[in-house]
Image 1 (cartoon, rainbow, N blue to C red):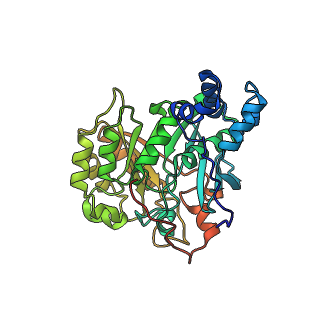
Image 2 (cartoon, rainbow, N blue to C red; image 1 turned 45 degrees about the vertical axis):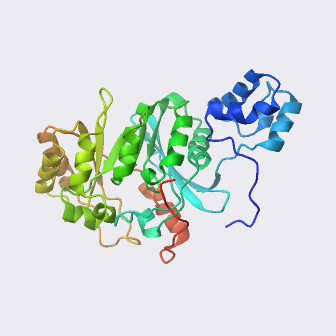
Image 3 (cartoon, rainbow, N blue to C red; image 1 turned 135 degrees about the vertical axis):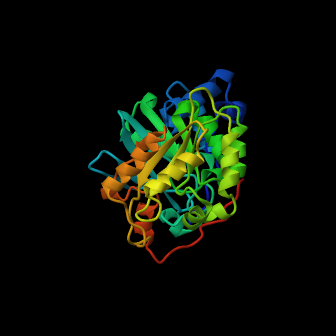
Length: 361
């Protein structure tokens, strides 16, 4: 970690426009100046006050003395042959997180992290193997989006955001909610997806938001016994209670809940498993993302990816049951693009540790 003292100036990244206006109002001569600052940070992705050329130099200097505009620092950028890019990003306290961009159907999907580690401990996920981490703050969440947008020079209207990076988003609801409020200024809620391992209180929180992103749930097994073996958090939020909560989740017109299903050879990949999944989610407006395991022999050598024939047979069985199915063939295999792999490569196999207390605040 860095030994530099923390910068006491409030970071305006990740702050909604109304809050930016309230913060800087005492230092501007006219109310519209505050709106201009918000537009520079949120709409124009400004990295400093010096870029705000429609403000006076005196005002820019004053704002620079009292506030900062800071994003995570890029430590490593790895580009894949399939167009995916993965970043290892350093935060101001020296901890690291990952962000990934993936071209999908002519658009760009940005995968953001919500924590510096993960306490959920899924047995097929490198982030879970690395251990728990602290919650990311709104500026650290939105900062990932800003960094990718700047580096890729991507048109905003072609960007989708998924919270499927490091961490469990619904164990960080307060900061996630603030970040979503800011992201909505540029990205429609229907183009943002929050993925969860099945944290029921967080799903209830999400259901109560006035503007909701799309919801994705990691399922990975159609029965309680195997699901809790793969995902220890299922012992706390059991499958019957989770499915009951999802059946009551409010969905906007045309929306569906996405069920993520990681296929692991000889564990959850048989035709009977697909038939059980179809029965489990029957009656829920849903689609299923079938995800062949992205292997990592360093962190989970016991798990193997099924062959393509098995993957396609599983997906076909779901389709025959009337479900909408996508097979998410892994991207970025040549740059360790699965969650936690790049950080895991830097941190090393023997260094599993907690980087802070995780809670829902």
